Length: 198
Length: 155
Image (cartoon, rainbow over all chains, first blue to last red; front, side, top):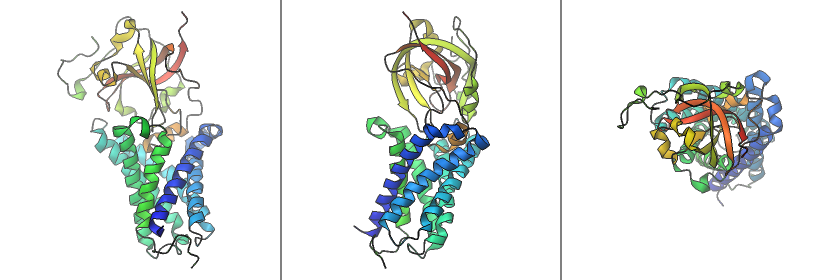
């Protein structure tokens, strides 16, 4: 399996597992921290759990990544999800609710997702030496991947729906989002085999 | 008459409504403050009580549960033409039931430490109390959003 396809797959799998774990944990015991700092701690932990699962999946497949990959990813996801909430809320209050859903909601989700992507990409920058030389490209690809993934996931579930896509909304959302991110990041990876030690 | 407009689709700014005669009002709960982006929901009344049968429930990416309720005849006056897009059912949405995936709902729900607990199941005949609004993003159909409380109707 090529590096690029493998990266896209493990990223999507990590995002699915992470979202399901975060949804379960935060939907149960996580409620205890809902009131702390107006929900910001809750969001940071929610993001950190997803980031942890994504990073573990990626590092298990790409052994040349440094151990700091996990900590940097967790940090990027945690900060990113806090930022996403504020960007989403800000755009939500600015954009006319009577706009067609695809335009209004699409803009909110795409731009919010891009903000999350920038946070993740920047946090991972010091640890990407084993992946790519294109530092700026990594941040841009992650921002585009998360942005388009966020918007596409929200749009597909809202407009297409159906029993398959809605069987598990968190898993479907994470699958679509993770694939967009994985593919976007894969485009700037070096072309070495996934498990290469060199 | 719930909708004070002609049968032709009206511009959204002209759609307005009031609580139909005979519909009982009630007291809101703290869930009122956890509805994200309130501008998308046109307020009609702080709390009304309806009775009906649950026909469908569905998790939403904004963290809400979307419940379709077939209202008893005495309560169908709260519906409008928009509800035809949902099979003529009232939409009822308890908020922040699952961690939202949608960006603009995240912080609002993250701060909700006491979301409504258990929810009715499909087939249950129940009374429901919630804020009566029109959903401007979805055909301006009538909803109870958020749901404040509910209970089974005893025969």
